[in-house]
Amino acid sequence: MAKSADSWVTKGRKFLESVSFYHWLFGLAVSGWTLWRSRGVMPELATYPASYFGAACFLFFGPLFVVTGSVKIATLAWPKIKTWRNPHFVVPIARGGANSATLEIIHHGPTATWEVRRRISGMLNESHANPDPVLRKCYLRRDGRKCETLALKDGESASVLLASVQRSEWSSPWMVVDDLETDGTRVPDEGVIVEIEISAQPPMPDGIIVRRFEISRDGRVIYVKDLS
Image 1 (cartoon, rainbow, N blue to C red):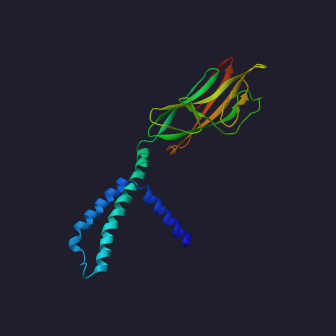
Image 2 (cartoon, helix red, strand yellow):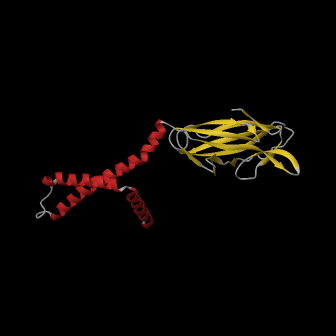
Image 3 (cartoon, rainbow, N blue to C red):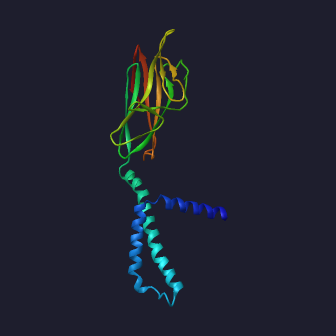
């Protein structure tokens, strides 16, 4: 029982600390006005002091906590209401090119934090074994920064490096499928099928976006084909 009481006290203290100064000021104004308007129906202080102070506390603190609590609940609920009425989403666009292939995600709607993962789900040449079927996190890149997760506003975009061409003095170039957990997975030039998962916080109404891409290389050029 003591532990339960302590938890409620802690929750109450955190709630009171989270209410802003202006919310308290508004609540105090409403409480003071309520107390002033109710003075005609209050018990006589000299005759019933206990009833007088009890009524005064109820009339002052009751509206205070109702007002500040209502404002706080409305403040917490408003972002969820906005997201429900106008849910966020992204438009993924894959692009191939010289030495690399990228996935651009363009954000629409309220601000959300995005995360991207990839998995090599198949080989175009079935005689090759899948070198990395594990789902791995990818970097989101924007304005020269690389992030595991990235918050985007309406109209903003970020890119993910899907694959790149690597070179060495001692061997011919090769293609790797990129991620942030490893140095990249070397794959054959004939190509692989890469599955991309795009998730957000708060979550999208339709859940995680899944896209599949065919990625292959010819010389220094990486080609991407959307299979979704």
